[in-house]
Image (cartoon, rainbow, N blue to C red; front, side, top):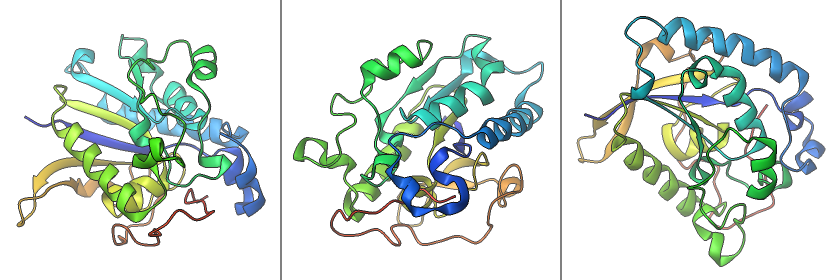
Length: 239
């Protein structure tokens, strides 16, 4: 049976502050002070919703984009699970869309030193490249991002756990996977279903249509919208 999935957007990072475009030049930015505070509310909401006598840590997985802001969010918001033995596993498939500095990760050697408790063993060896032919599967193009989204959905559906928490980015979650907006540190809950065409897709739980914290827009957008056919110099991680 496919797991239930909680998709989480990272808390506010430095490049999200005040919606200033020049901040996109910050490479792999960390959380802001406000972002760290947002993780407190995210942590409490997740724990209120999930924790209880029936919670079995062996039936839970935590996956995160290998970027600094997502790993920090994962550590701050899911420590009540990692303290019970659930490992945070980094996965390059969940990184943000564009190739701007703010959306480009740091070498795994550096991230291992900064996040020693995170499992980086299965991160794609091409990380953090997404501009050369070798990193083409992560390119900022409509074809590559939609293919990556389908791949993530398929891989999630085969997970053995009953619950999977994923900490990722607004652009990829919105236009690459689900068609919904996330504000910083908000989350949405999904189950799997097959469309009339037979395609596997995610169906959102009605309780999170405005986000689990009620911070996000309810109206959906078209998958692949605003994504270029070729890789431009643009960022998709909104404030």
